[in-house]
Length: 171
Image 1 (cartoon, rainbow, N blue to C red):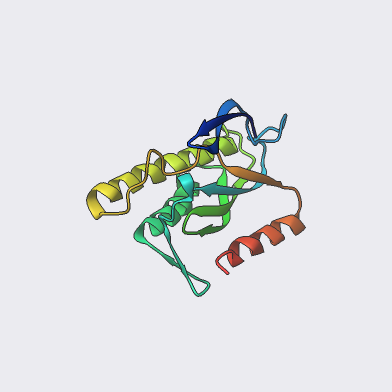
Image 2: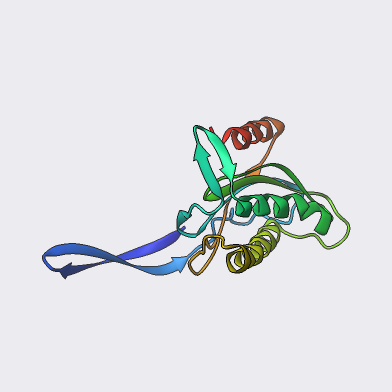
């Protein structure tokens, strides 16, 4: 969460509000070790919530090739990063939901922010290539919003509820 300081400016008789970003704080749970083994529910939104990955038609999701690329990068995470598992995942027109599982590992372990950073980097690179080579819709400045939302999944009941939510998200 971040703190905003509001400044009012008169313009043409209308009141406009300008906000100055004073402090950008992390959404992460303070004091929690995000490299700790466990399951995490993540949501990542496109910058300005631009619909870049597909459309929803009558409750059915129709992915564009860009959305299929995002799915492929997600599916490949365990191949490239030992100790990282994935579970339910959905690409929506302007965001993704997924479950990341950090496994116990004796080698150097990636944290959840590390995994998400690598996912965003890889998808941004491939999306930019698609803009140049395949005429995908361009994005302004960034493909993804600056951060991501997460929830620590603490028990099996929550895990199953979140998995169902992800799978039913297009509805």
